[in-house]
Amino acid sequence: MHISDFDYDLPPELIAQTPLEPRDASRLLVLYRETGALEHSCFRDIGRYLRRGDLLVLNRTRVIPARLFARKPTGGRVELLLLHREDLLTWEALAGGKGLAVGKHIRVEGGPEAEIVEVLDGSRRLVRFAEPIEPYFPRAGHVPLPPYIHTTLTDPERYQTVYAREPGSAAAPTAGLHFTPRLLDELLAQGIKIASVTLHVGLDTFAPVTEEDPLEHRIHSEWCQVSDETAAMVNQARSQGGRIIAVGTTSVRSLETAAQSSTAGRPSSINAFTGATGLYILPGYQFHLVDAMLTNFHLPRSTLIMLVSAFAGRERILHAYEIAKREKYRFYSFGDAMLIL
Figure (cartoon, rainbow, N blue to C red):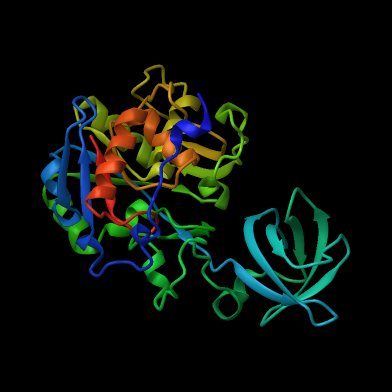
């Protein structure tokens, strides 16, 4: 297995720069794993492919306005992208700016003072704020959009799912951006059940793999939670013949992490789980719980395209992507969706 096995060319004009309105107006490419057949649809019609008793599993994480700007004593500007909170005052962050060595003091624009307390690999730093930074998010924080989006987002809520509740992510679980409250209500009325997990998305999830051998790539851990209620809903749906449909790769990793850590005795059963997950899903992985997956179109050479390739087969995924390119689907975070059955 080589990283080049997960590469493909994408014309820049197919990278979606803005979200569609309404959310559920996006296109939906349906891939049937058993046959490789493809079907073109619209996201608002997703209920046609679901059936009574199926369980949709959503990630309720909320993107925090984790992009901050600060000034050094000399007046030089620094950019911080908060990745993970270590304790009440200390965050791991990506830091942009020169001279950010241990002991360097900076002041957040519209916020408190901070100090660089540890230099990690690359541009990563541990930053300790003089007081909790969260209360300053409304006036000092900016929602961090992926680097391939160059158009200003006028409404930051469009980079949040309509069901986002638990703040903590540096990036949105983008497969869920297509849902509207009305569509979710229609699915419930159709007899489809809805459960939730929480996985706080880190930027490393979207980073290209640079190692030639994907097995040598180090995936960073992310915090996730599968509650007792969700575990019970999963187990009940499985026992009654319903399918577990993960909305996004983050829901897949949460569910599969819970399955691996469970002592329930049956591979189709899970217990609740709370903690860090570093689950790295590559082709050859045996899925324990997930029967279907809703996802967007992913970057080449990323851990995400490897995950969907593990689920549906590399050749089928790359073929589907070529068809999506030919049919002018919109790619990446604000792009169209793919349902893998």
